[in-house]
Amino acid sequence: DSLLVLINLSKHLPTSLVCSVVSHMDDDNNSIRNVIFEFVETISCRNDLDLEAPAHCIASLLHDENDNVKIVALRALIQLGDSAAACVDSIFGMILDDNTAVQVYAIKALYYLNVERPEF
Image 1 (tube, rainbow, N blue to C red):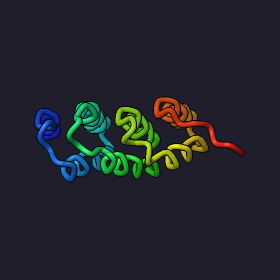
Image 2: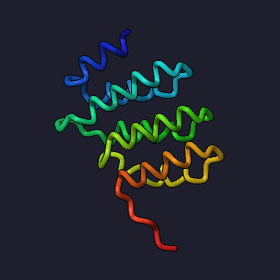
Image 3: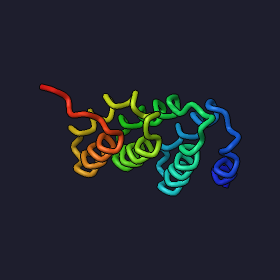
């Protein structure tokens, strides 16, 4: 319930509290992860908030053991758009993940973030 309140207050939260909220996206409870994803969708529309720090918090979750956490983190990074550009290296790393769904979301994230293919 407190997360729903945070979503309603998201128009007023400073960056530090946003980072605190998104850091809980690694929760084992799928419902909590989904609420936090909705929170990310809501804050991604704010023009007054620097979302690069929350993007880094979310990108750190890409190293979680739980594939569902990785997938929701990749989806959240897609929502953050240009603010997630600094996290591209972490996203590239997910292309080599053991889970095919994680790989697909990593490719989608790179596509939606309009990342050019690296030269080899």
